[in-house]
Length: 475
Image 1 (cartoon, rainbow, N blue to C red):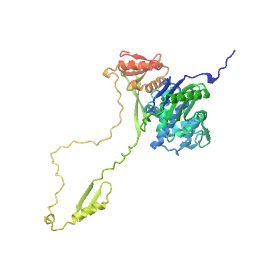
Image 2: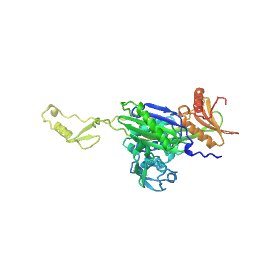
Image 3: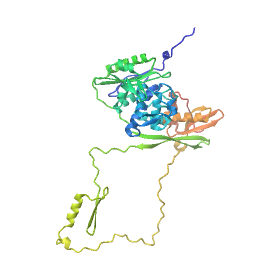
Image 4: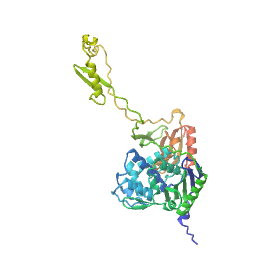
């Protein structure tokens, strides 16, 4: 007999998290730090960065966005955009927030950063700034991709920032329908919004690997609760579980609590620059990968309220009977300055100052330079060229390293090194990434570490189920 099991019955790993949105206090947690597939919960970050970019003046809601072939080819759920089509950013934002359209999310990322890969890097920088310590983004929409992971805790943190950092846009997540330019779209979570009192967002997500995910927020009186579920078995069971968790949150949350909004991260665009070179610190040829960041935009700070700029200095010069009142900002004399100077010059001629004969003007010309002075030639100053300094792995006792596997191709080994370095920056920052060719394949090594750092890195990677062993100085 063949047993047919429906896909909805195949449960993805379950996780849940409930917080008091006003204070950030944890009210319930289960597997909240387990890295799982976030699915379309990812679009909360895509939209957060869109709001951030609009606020910073990088783009506007009325900017016409040209749809690329890549964005148009994204699988459903989608708005049905065509390659080459132009559409306002505001309609893409509505489609991503309400319908969870994958083509709209990709188009948003490409419009802001030029490519989805660059946008994913910005997503990861923003996640780190928000305190999402166990999240890695690979795309703007959340479709399953290796390494694209998050946690129930991190997604709750993100939902809270969306709520408090951009309240002017938060109403998008409670709209049951929205005009997306090319057509009207319906909300993916209209059932919970209609059935649970006080529910007003935020985002659903589903893939086969993730299950049915949801970050929901509800407000009753002065209380606001955020509940997150990963790995629901169906839309109905997920909604029922979220309603149960919201009820739990309202029971446990104090009726009165101070509103402590999360700290909003500063806005600044930076782009990772990968610089490659050769390292022969252990006598073997390998490829070294360095990651640097270069700030591309920094906003001018606003003037402090009530502070007035210091007045520009006034320079007064006399040349015969002509007065010139000059300011650094305006060459036209101010009326008050003209009147004061004119009055000073109209002093009666019988004053002691007027009776004193004028002394000959003293020359301000500097004395000639002595002929026997030897001048040193000074080369014109030039702007220093940027340089990348590669630390020698054998300095300061940093003779150790770690191996994270052997791979059939150099490309695969380099990719694993880069991915591992980005996921474990706290211990691997500043190390030398080396690919060493051997008969069995290409070893992916991190070199230039102390024994303690290598041991710590291996233990942290092992906890993430990444193969790792230490490499001694003689290895």
